[in-house]
Image (cartoon, rainbow, N blue to C red; front, side, top):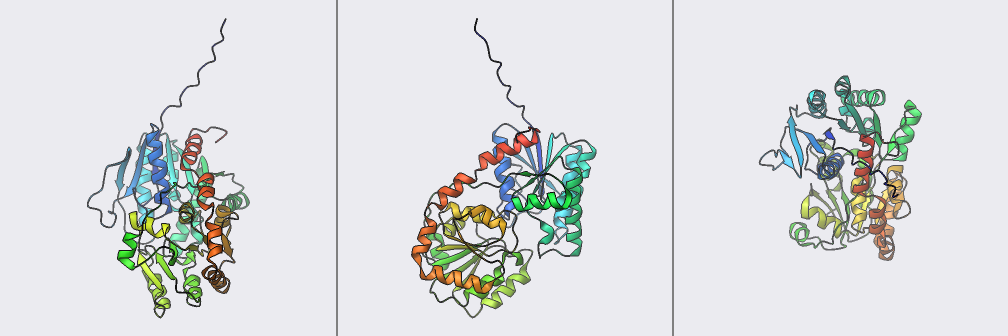
Length: 384
């Protein structure tokens, strides 16, 4: 007689809610990228995914879409002031999740977790992703830091699972709260080579003619060190600083004042779409001099384009790059200047770090794997 092996049942689709992001689809920050990548993949796998966006439209957007690649988009009231936007939007989102018919409510970032107890009252399974220790970020005032710390403690007390992106953050939660977390890093999407027509037309940029920083214009990214260091580098290559500064305009003005006597330093604003691809695809070296990071998606993206990368030596960066990038002691403008000068003088070093960068990073960080691990965690599977 033939023995019939019982077929494994397909896991039933989940009803998933996500909150904490400004809005999707968007590249306004790393959280928005992560939520977009996860939500769309989970929806394509047959799950019912709802993302709660802030009500304010993205800059240049004509309307608020109700759906994106199978993901339902809902909008919640938001007080559009620094320190209050995330607080108010996450309150209304958490309230709607508490009364919604969801299997899982996924909170992104620590601040929104201030309201995590609301869906827990209604026995929702709550998952938290800590995208970085936000209370350490320089841009927040006293009230915002208080909310973030309360959110962190609420996550520790009430969340069914906490996801962290780095070993350093995993150690922080273990040592500070004796709380176990799940390490699920971010992913990266393989890219195709791009031209340089848009960046040449806009700013006269040619391939390999510039060092690039691309990210949020905030103090903890180390941009003061970068501008200070680059002013002393002897090179005809440009330094291109790309990124938005909606919440930190005074800091942007400070940087521009520091750089005003050096025409090699260019501020090009927020970069998205083809312009973003061209900036990454034609950079001589990508520079990330941060003092603080969660898990820098811009660094993963830069490496996926095969860039030579120069980063500070903080664990959030070195865990990503291993020995595939150059580093300097964080906060040391003199050491940063020496590293930049070395790269400017030695293109063969740049070429050596380019070799294999894209293959390394795309093999190490994969969005499909991240999605599978997260769904397993939603279901409470032991090997998640």
